[in-house]
Length: 113
Image (tube, rainbow, N blue to C red):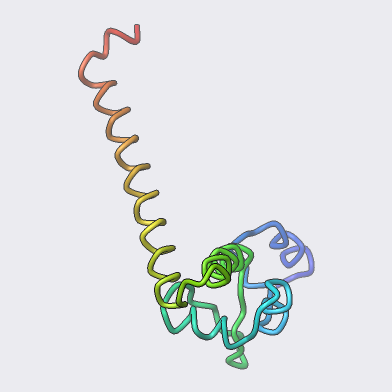
């Protein structure tokens, strides 16, 4: 990988740029919290060649949402389940809207003309 490739990934939300220590620092939490949400399968950090956990910005946003819920008194496992269900609901709504748009387009294709 060249330096240009590395710099191009700085804007990539899925690029695992953060070590566990840095991710915990950014989130204002502990490394144990990150391990706990990983064990609950909320996020699965990528591993470096040396086996160290690496997190993306997208994963940090998910972890931040989990931390919000935990800070409000929700147990970690429940917070993770809530976030997973929220994500599934959002995806189902997106698919439903897509099907709805498609159905409107095929039910009366002349209406658009």
